[in-house]
Amino acid sequence: MRFVLLSLAVFIGPAARAADGWQPVATELLAKEKTGFGGLSGVAVDHDTGTLFVCLSDRGVFRSADSGKTWERHGKDVPKGRTETPGCLQRDPTGKTKTLLMATVYGGPVIVASSDPATPWRTMDKKCEHVDWCAVDWTDPEMKFALAFKHEAGGLLLLSRDGGKSFSEAGKGHGLGAWVFDADTAVVAREKSRQKATGGILRTTDGGKTFKPVADYTPVALPKPQGDALFWLVEGALLKGTEKGAKWEKVSDVKDARYGPVFGKDAMHLFVLTASGVIESTDSGATWAKPIAVPKELKGVSALTWLEYDPKNDLLYVMKMGSDLYKLARPK
Image: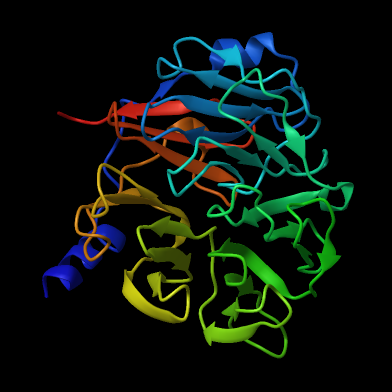
C-alpha cells in the first residue's frame, strides 16, 4: 500500500515541487564557442571525481573539474556534429575505466576517447557515421563486439566484431537502446510495428548472428548497469534484467519516463527523468519521491532532455539540446 500511495502522490497529485535553485553553468562557454546547430548537445559526469564533460555541436568536448565554474577543451580533436540521444555521450558505465564513448549525428563516426586529454581519439569505421547511440563490450579493452543504431534509417542496427574497424548490417526494426555483456551476449530493443503493438527486448548469445525475444516491453531510454543487473526504462515501468539479460522483472511503475536511471551514491540510490520532473528513489526503484521540476527555461521535458548526477558533490544536472546546462545543489 505504501508504494501505491506514493505513486498517486507523485503522478496524479499536486504539481511537481518547485526547484528554484537550478543554476546555469555553461553560459560563458556557449557564448565563447561558435557552436553549430544544437549548441550544447550532451553531458556526462565522472561519478568518482565529479568532473563534468559536455559536447558542443561542431566544437567537440569540454570538461570542468569545478562543477562548471571553469572549462577547458578535452582532447585535441574537434569532431564535427553533435550528440543527440540522451546518454550517447558516456563515461564507461561499469566504472572500470575512464574511457569516453561518443556517438554523433550529422557528424563523424563513433569516437572512443581516453581520460588523458593528450591521447589521440580513436574513431570507428565511417559506416557508423550518423548514428544515435553505440553499445560496446566494456569488459574487453578492444571493444571487439559493438552495436550502433543508424539515425532515421528504419531502426537499422549495425554490428561490429572487430572493435569498430568494420560494421555489417544486423537488420531493421530495432528501437532505443542496447547493452553488450560480453563477446557473445547482448540485448537490444525492438521497436513497435504494425505487426507488433508493443516493442520488446531481443537477446543474442552468438555475437549477433541471431536474436531471440526475452521481454515484451517498449524501452524508452538507453539501459544502465548496476553490478550484475541491467536496468531499463520502458513505457510505464522500470525493469531489472539479470543472468546477462535472460530474465527480466518489473521493479516498479514509472509514469511518463523519459531518461534514466541515473545512479547516485550507492546501488539503492537512483534518479529518473519523467515528464513531470526528476524523481528519486533510495530503495533501488521500489518507491519514488515527488518529482523535482526542471528549470523553467527548458520549457518542459522532451526526448532530447538529459539528466546527470555528481555523487561526490551531490549535484543534479539537466539540459535539453540547445539549452544551457543547469545544476541543482541538493539540500543538506
